[in-house]
Length: 325
Image 1 (spheres, helix red, strand yellow):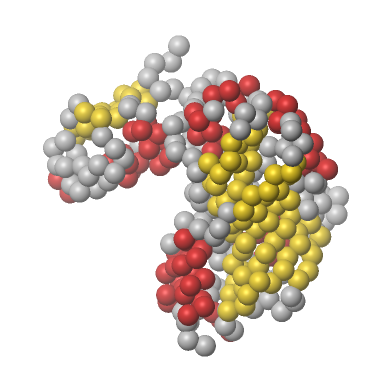
Image 2 (cartoon, rainbow, N blue to C red):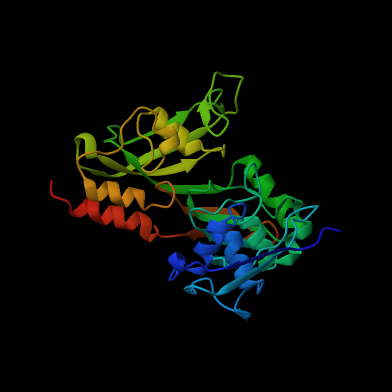
C-alpha cells in the first residue's frame, strides 16, 4: 500500500499576500490548480495547524502542510471541486463546465478533471462506464466552457451513448471566430484525425485516414473588418470528434479567438489592443456549449437545456458591439 505524501514549507517573505492555492500550485507543479483546490477544500491542507480556504492570503513565516493521497490504482480518485449543476436526478447530471477543466484523465493530466469532481459529487458513478472515465459519455475540450451531460447509472450511460451513436443528441455552440466570414451559413464535412506533425493537434486528413466529421455553422453577428474583424457563429455538431469545431473553422481560415494551436500562420486580430487583452483573459478558447438536448435515457422525456454565454465571452461581445466603426 502506498502511503500519503506530505509536503511542508514555510512561506517566504517575498510570497506574502499570495493566495494559498496559487502559492501551493507553484510549489507542487505536478498537481493541477483544481487538484490543489480540492486538497484545500477536503481539509488536507493546514496553515499553522488550522484549516483555511483557497483564497487565504499567506503571510511570511506561516507553515503550510499538505497531505497528498496517492493516485487511485484503478479508476480515478474523487476530488471535492464545486460543480455548476444545471440539472440532476437519479440518472443524469448536467453540468456547466468552466474553461480550463479537463473532462477526464488523459495524457499529461490525471487530476483536476470533471470526472473526478463529478465522482465526489455523486459517488454512485464509480461503476458507470469506464473506470478512468466514470459517467462520461461525451467530452468538452479543456478550453471550452458550457453544457455537458454525465450518466449516474449504467442504464443512463447505455441510453445516452446509444443516442450519441444515432446522432440524436443536439449540441449547440457559440463561437467567436477571427475574421469576417462571408457566407451566412454552411456545412463543413471533412474527416478529422491526428495531425501527423503534432501529437497535441488534430487535422483534416485524407478520406479513410480519419473519422467523418460534420459541423453546421450559421453567422449570428459580424463585427468590423480588416485585421480586427470577428464573427459570432452558432455551430451545431452532427458528429463529435476531438477539436472538431476548432479544426473545421480553422480550415475555413477563421480560427477561434484564443486558439493558438490552430491559428497557424494567421496573425491574431490586430489594431485593437483592448480586444487583444480580452482574448488573453479568455482562460481558454472562445467556444461555449450553449445548448444541449437529448431524450432522458430512463424516463423517455425530452430534455432541453440552455446556458448563457459566460462573462469571459460576453466581455468580448460588449467591446465589439461598442467599439467605434
